[in-house]
Image 1 (cartoon, rainbow, N blue to C red):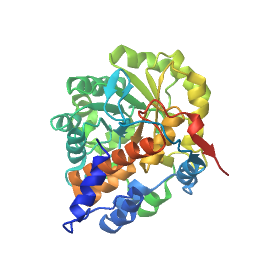
Image 2: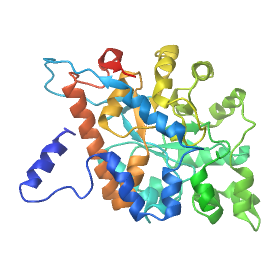
Image 3: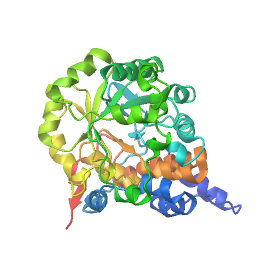
Image 4: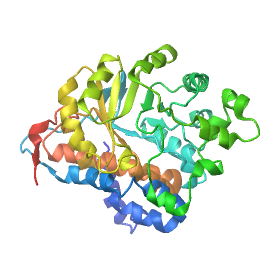
Length: 376
């Protein structure tokens, strides 16, 4: 079904109509760079330190090669998966990306509309530049990503608001209790939150507003992140969120086991796209030992470095039930708003389906380690 996008493009080509954006999603970034301000581009594209972790994310994919199997007899391909108690039509979600209004005036609203049109779940960032309620008005299936603030009453308020607005799962980002050393942003002297962009969920919150006084941005700076958190604090989340919870930023097998012991429903194997720790392990390299360690005790998702349908299939083969894509759709948003996000999703899902079929698989649960070959 998703692969029909390929036929649509070829048929349109008969009348001289070609896609307005590249179908190779790696070509979107340089185009977005030409369109965006220096500050906005650097914020999205930038990584921690030298960028070594971001590069390693991509190298980890290149080191693993697909081994197609022939005469498999599959006439259809089912992309359905079940994650955090929900049946998803595809194993791809739109990961949380903050401050999207710096890329396009419609920001998160355009992303939500595109995701809804495609039936894809959107994970909304706490650092969104539109409030969770505004996004919920136009969104389809949606999860909420929490940056756990240094104020428990504010955390409770965020969770209550997300539940009331129809967000069905909670994704808690653990790796960003403080911002990393990010040279591109530092060289530009640019942090959007200090300019009142990306704080919209805070500014709209009654608990935040009650303590903000005359300087809400200074108040935001005092509350963002909570380095004092420990595994024992996860009990607090269970007390105030009655839906499924996934911990995002897991890169170590022991942390994955502790998430199981804490009764979490899922984990996202992720290094934040290389934005937090320079010199860290490539996220895809962290995936196999983690999935081996936890088995089917917890749902394992993956992000950091997804750029193609082949990448999606490789992550599935290494044990992920679904992946989160981020920068590609952000670049699509920058280039063409809602239509750009839809284009990214259509390309990614078409290529995922075609790669599965051409590799000899009829659904997203059948790829396994034996379809991959490691190269050095």
